[in-house]
Image (cartoon, rainbow, N blue to C red; front, top):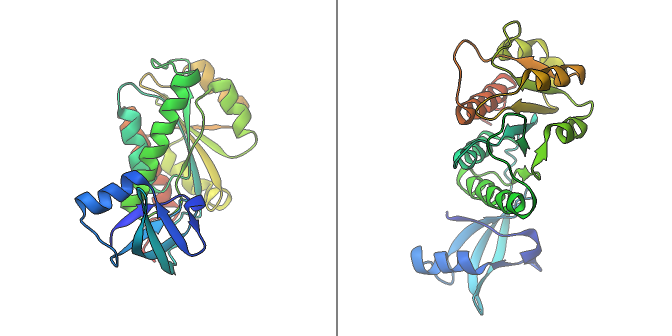
Length: 250
């Protein structure tokens, strides 16, 4: 069954109003017609089986036939703080961690960031990344779209985290590995919100690591090999979800 995103405000009175771009795709590319059945999700946790019923100007209409019960969100709410890398690497990171199950994404400008974003440019980037997360949800059958937070700096990030549990991935951390940390802290972390901090290409500075330590954030290493930022994000998200039982069927 084909699956589409429809915002909650366009689902009312047992009818679904599909936006112009998706209506065009449904008719011109998929060649679906009145009477055909598709599924739609609203990004807030609801999914419906609907039947195409007509058109209102450039918008396709559909009637809700059933709500599909699909709760596939992780109990462990992983908030990924990602130092913005160069090029389109952030696009890949957002797509893949959405598929893995990350719930919130914080784009970060840190001391060693090459990319500097602010103002309208930053807002447009966040809008684009939010769209990428939405499209990833269509593919992986998530019904809740991860939230893309505004771009923030390191000081603002620490205030945002507050007293909530957080792990900083740091390539020079030799005492504590991520696997060991997750298993030692499983009772206090599993099923909760966890912040995971990943730096840009140059990683975090020593000053940032020390400031994070003072705030109660725990640095952890990923072993002897240095991973690219986009690789690290996927690996770390996958490890945490695996360790805390979020990749088991059913």
